[in-house]
Length: 558
Image 1 (cartoon, rainbow, N blue to C red):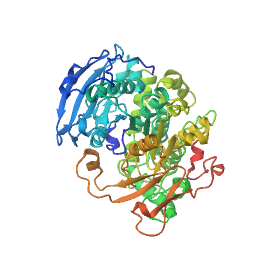
Image 2: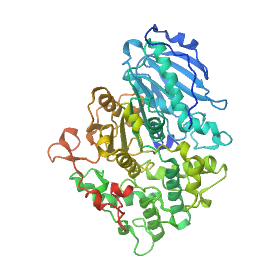
Image 3: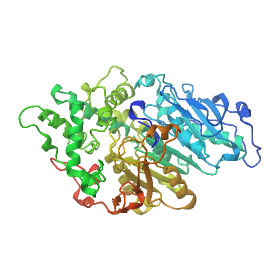
Image 4: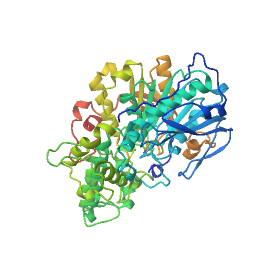
């Protein structure tokens, strides 16, 4: 689970109680700017600065354990620190400070992904922040990894590390970074922003809920905010396929499934482009996939059909019939690095995250596996044990809004890691808890058709939500659209290599509006789209999943 709209593929991805970081603050009213090397002597308790380096423009920056490097877009002062808010804490963080002449006066915190474990995750986003003149910071969420193996055993016997991961690491990093910025530039940042996707989205919402004074504007993408329910959904998908050997859906059939969905729903928006523009309007009945005379490559057996239906539906308490968490919309099953990576098979990313989470965070047993999970009772155990620490799904954002904070949520419709229905559900919960008019003053949701987990996919998936939230916070100009682009080489966009011209551009519309092609000009150009109401029926008609269909309306996700 990743932190940025320009993030690495899902295969690389795999924060409760605040302890104050005691820092000797430099008064921005009287301080003179410091040289980079002087920051090695920056006084603080509750941590130790471990490295101060001047990085020249064009420098290659390795990102272990990721198999890539970044190219520095500008010169900056790179400060590494280990923060120790408790005796069992070791939060490795970095602050990147652009040259004073190029600083835009603001600070951008960057979220991590998955279980964290390295500053390399946030660094993918920090590169772009420095390029835009932000002072920026990220951290490893309180523990270190040396490989890309999805592993949660680091929590065993370390309850303070669970708190560092869930919420404390980002808070103490923000405090340290702001103090360091004031020392380096001689003044504090004027505005502070945070951006994160996946677990970074969870971090973003935790900041808004638990530390509303840390940031003035927040961007939360594909937020893994309801950790206990999301992980239960992951186990549900695993059990649906693997409880019986004949239920597992072969990866070779995923393209066939997606082709059938596309045949039904791709052209609903008037553009046949391999993208379902608004899955709420898609009425796909998976029964059309059933084999009529034995197993075949172009159909699903009844056990495979049942598994697919359960993935679409989402987890249910077998005793009460209560829906635990929404399922996944159809239409992106065959995309490379999507269902094949996240959902299908015994080694799927969902399976690994859920077993590591429940085994280590909840059960305290590194050898635990999903076969002992009780969908009627074990979610309650997880909520009692760790829910109040790790979940960032409270819809009460009153303190954040009262400070003038602005929040942008975004989500890819083709995301196979964090279900789009879950993000819509949270947005609707905020509207209900705070009132629609009040919520509209500080929060927007943007859905991205054809975008996979935090990026990638056939739809335009590269966009600058931080610029939109900054304009909203600083100039009170609320965003109703954000223009997204798709590049032929998304890795170039990620690492700072030349990316060339976009292959396509499209506006993302503030939910619940949808971008519609006007029918004139190229469907690959943003100016040929307008935002208007969805063609899906009003929420009143979307109270429940269709028995044999898409279960696709946003209201049903609630």
